Image (cartoon, rainbow, N blue to C red; front, side, top):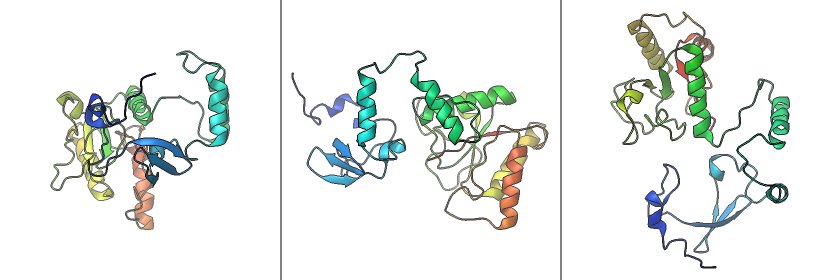
Length: 244
């Protein structure tokens, strides 16, 4: 079998990276293997992996029970593009452990999850606008790639695409609000509702509010927390938050 050095044909992978995230060349590396919380690079360095596959490797790399389960399933087949006997049993366990889970939809990654969520919310509400917070990453699809890199003097709520190739028609359905700024966000929503001729409280919303303070960057007083927890449920817009 012919083997190829990992770095010899890196130019065959656009950007020499997966997805839309790329390390600067001076700190970039090629992973050889992972175990527990550590990664080993092809040049022999051991690194602590704080990314953990962007979420799914929460118990670390190559956990013995996970390895055993993968090996057991591999001899039975891996991808069927059809319902299999494992998925319903896993869905039942998730529903038992998550009180709000009435049904479970399995997807390939977080971008696919937010993409389906947006489509479902649009279908349910009959509305097209999506509100997202600047700096939040929700995947690599066209709707999500807006306002990822915060910029001073941004003309809120106008959405700036983070990549070429995103149609302007898509960008026109995205509203961007400043991160952790409840007052400005509320003003943007009220203004948008007024421009479109409906009240923020005129209908039930598909909004998924972020935690009241939006992040650990700051916290709101108890009155603001109460207000932040109440108003999103009345918004006639769609908001999707990241769990990362």
